[in-house]
Image 1 (tube, rainbow, N blue to C red):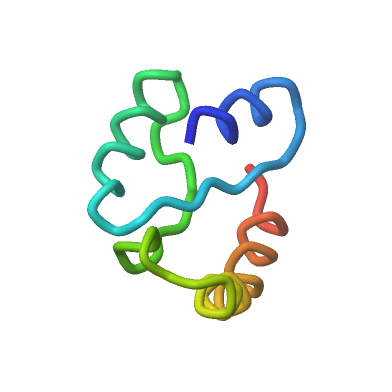
Image 2: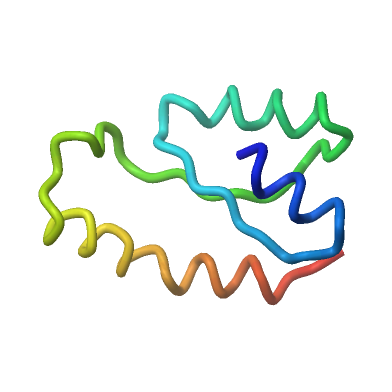
Amino acid sequence: MLDAILFERVGVPAIAIVTEPFRPTGEAMATSWGLPGYRFLDMPHPIANLDDKELDARADRLVEAVLALLRVRD
């Protein structure tokens, strides 16, 4: 989350992706870093137990959402 926020601060579009239980933490972090309402994505938790194929499949399902967020800039 912080990496995406820091990229945004220097003008580099970025999308943070967190697992669902960390959405509130991501929202709080964005607010504390001066970006309340920062748009980011969440995905099902956990991911640590996924193999490469399963993780790739989850990432593939996020591509359209990532592109949509990158297109919508304030």
